[in-house]
Length: 116
Image 1 (cartoon, rainbow, N blue to C red):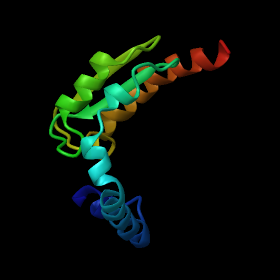
Image 2 (image 1 turned 180 degrees about the vertical axis):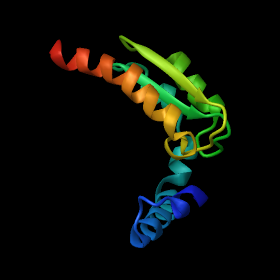
Image 3 (image 1 turned 90 degrees about the vertical axis):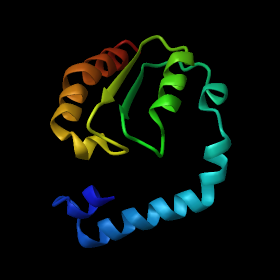
């Protein structure tokens, strides 16, 4: 959360609402999410799957993300691990995050869009 509060792109209200949303989301769905096995709930997707995972994420652990990645069946899948990030690699490792989006993910997504 410290990155949200120090991010110059967020207004004060957006910073507060981000925190409120995280708390309310956890209160509403935390027990459901903690017990859910995403690999069991979503065994197959008919579209490309990209996992962008912070190595130090304790909200969605690396182990959970890797289990989902290993088990999901998709026409294309790739997992990226951000070694210096937790739950917000798009803030903690912005440059690398956006390089992956631009260089790796967009070309695959655009190819999928035009093949429909």
